Length: 138
Image 1: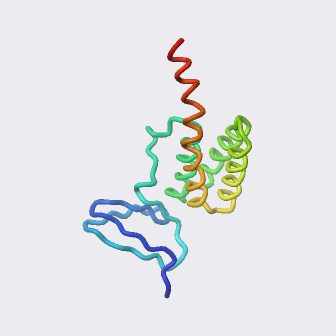
Image 2: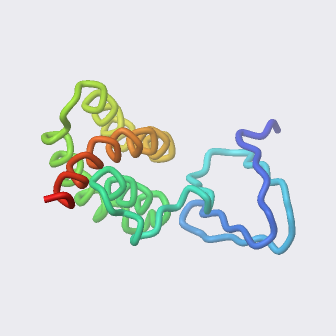
Image 3: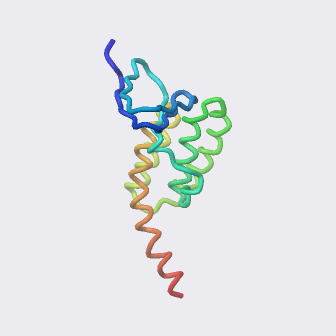
């Protein structure tokens, strides 16, 4: 059977697969042979890092992936936050990416949605930085 996904983990790293948290004691290469919802520890955003609307959206979406037992409840929170961010998005490329993100989440393709949201972190931070600097200068 051909591997659907192959990745390496270092000793002590964690991976979240279908709601289970796995840790490895030594370097290992894993192959997923079937469809699974997973998130590598390096892609997990901590609640303290959810400091902007886009990072908050990422955090909520990752919660759907990490805790599938609560997915229905969390999906409601995702939809509310998503709608709010979509309304305030300033530029067309961001709106298009957000629209695609919403479609991916609704289709259960959370990992792909997370990848897309991560691409919006930097543009969001650039647009917020001048406002923050102006407020601090005042």
